Image (cartoon, rainbow, N blue to C red; front, top):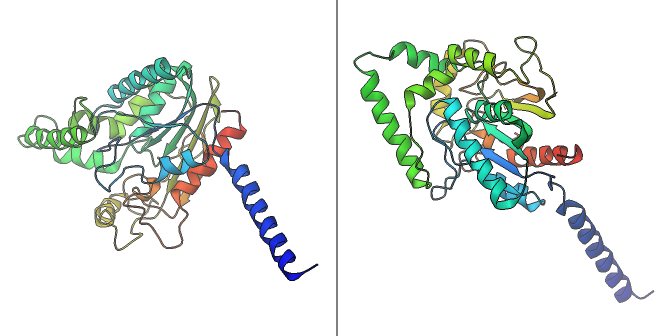
Length: 310
């Protein structure tokens, strides 16, 4: 065999291998039911300039074949109200696309939001995945409630300012839903979370820092979170999360949510080297040097859902 023919054969085999791998990966995230991403407090559903709440994650999932939607709910409001807004969006998607169920992925306050939908409208939900969600409350919400209790002279002006800010974020992304910072803080407080869990316990861990049932009423429940705080010197959110972590004492946390609070249903992992923003690839994908890529982790999770027939 001549050298020229041998080189051509090697090139052909390489191209065949690449095309085979590409074909094998093209359906890697192609879940049976569409994926819906649900943001947390002060989140938004569209990129604001170069800043995207779910930075690169939707594109990563779509590249593998997934159908992905991003929910549009209030940036700041009570869990139940945000849940009703999500139900509105899912009913609309159902009418427009004919798809009957959805794989809901919620970050931070988006976690309780999707849990609410799974509880009151299980017909809409195939699976629930919580990322860094304060299922038993957030210390920052408790601290703010103590510092600015309802009815105090400063609580209303501060809440009004926060509502304006949340409304501004909403308008930038095309959302016109109402904002209520005080209602959001009440939902995210320890007392608010405990009351919410009594009403919507599906997937709740049987012990304080344990796991819960992996499936309830035919809906799969998953959770994941990080336990790092200061992960990248160029990330503008790190100092804020560093300050927030001081409220946890010695408890492992991501800067806003404690490790045990994030656990719900089948716990996939609760100690990623991520802070609260890193969990959804904020800010602009900046994170710890050797930490896993959140987009890749969710890509693998979509494949998990696919293999479960979801």
